[in-house]
Image 1 (cartoon, rainbow, N blue to C red):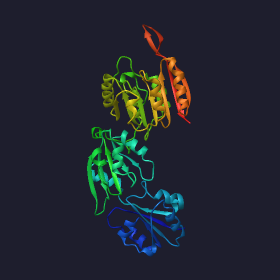
Image 2 (cartoon, rainbow, N blue to C red):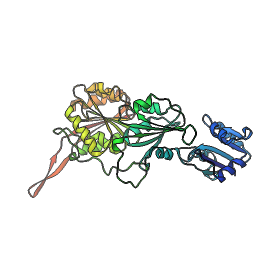
Image 3 (tube, rainbow, N blue to C red):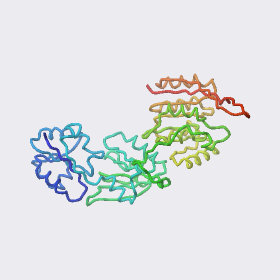
Length: 400
């Protein structure tokens, strides 16, 4: 059985086991800077590059033990996964170094047991960006194609500060702090780790689980959990169905259009999604701000009238339309052409149900409509009765 020793490098001197593995290896595989750093003879080295298929073939062809050099902890969003899939875990021996994420938080002087770590390296960065929009403390493993500047540009409009740690552990290590505008205007060396911070929400209770993602402890909260204007709030029973249809979770972006109290946006945020609440009424916007603070979640509030207010927003995974004013068809179509997964409407007027479904179908959605009528038990002296709530049509379009 071929032995492949995966060695993490973090700028410190290799420990004896790692030195021995490099010395005895018939083939040493690594990035050019790592091979140069250790002075590996070119006759027994191979450079990691591209999609790594050439490197894995060279490892396969080697007659003796192989050493693979990687940054930090190679088992954390690193090359261990690829090697395990290709050669089996029984072939691997891993000697990790300090991970770049741990080192970045140490440089920032921050604890990181409550942080979320995401990778935009070799992946579509959209979901990583959405986690940064939703959570107060995120470490992002970037790539040459999607570095600190690109990340900061995507987060313009969300109140975040940035901590960029470049070339950690090396002679060219550089640490920078800044706003989205400052980071997006900079030039950054690779590799780097970016910490994205919502300073207003960093303080929290002592946790018991890493990553900062926890159960919200229930959803479809009572209306009393939200300030609202008059009766302008999606009732909890309707909200439960709407949340099931939207399916919000980490990595998603949800629009709440005609947000009213912001109850749907806030519930989506409590379930880990990035959310945008669009509302034209000033008093309702004040309610949304206070409700967001009360539930300690991140909701980007756009004060304006749809569909114009939607133009500069990033494309959503799912959209809830709770209020439309007079531009009903324009709003539904504007949301439908941009939603990646689903559009959900809560409608009281029967006249809008069929047109909404037709618009969604024309935009490539499979449509389902549910008529929801709920009643709550109330007491009248010693007797009890059912008091009906407002009936509502929930129209759901799922992209096919």
